[in-house]
Amino acid sequence: MSKAFDARRVVTTALCISLCVVLPIAFHIVYISASIFSPMHIPVLLCGLICGWKFGMLCGLIGPVLSNLVTGMPAVMALPAMTAELTVYGLVTGLMIMLVRTKHTYIDIYAALLVAMVAGRIAAGIMRALTISLFVAGDATDFTVAMWVTSYFVRSLPGIITHLIIIPAIMLALYRARLIPKRYLKSNKYN
Image (cartoon, rainbow, N blue to C red; front, side, top):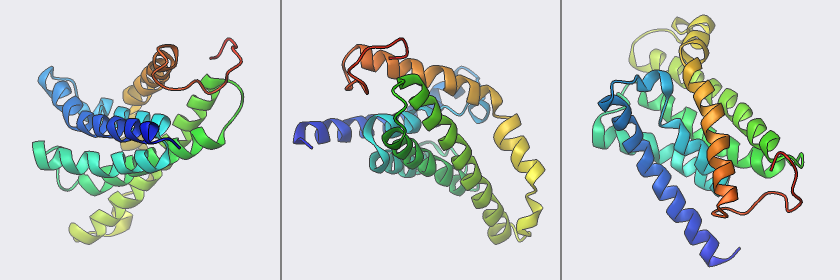
């Protein structure tokens, strides 16, 4: 791997980490619920897709912690679950985009996103249950499966849909602008 490509991945990761701080602020300024639309997830998922699993995982780990230190968002009690979720997002999108090779770019991207979104939400649910049992003097069973489904799938459905529309569109624009290398040299209707 060339040093220039590594430098681009480092710069892209730094940009994505900074977007983890800036995007939630922008949502709050225009009174859009960041907890529903999850703007911090977008740069982490993009970082995993563009830079690979190591950088994506790093972005997911640093982004929410830095945001908490700079802005106080996410709240301290939500930070462990969100950090686990975003770290898994960056890791899994990077691994999936590397492993899934259907010869259709959009299918590869959607497969990576969907698997990462489910895996990240599972990690967040486990971390939230542990946080409740350790810090709230409750029992891990106080956080039920129904509560997990409601908070991570039902309430965040607008964010999930938004991510599944915006992220492939951004990736396609980056491919077309030749800012990132195309996955497949042969042109087809999904590239």
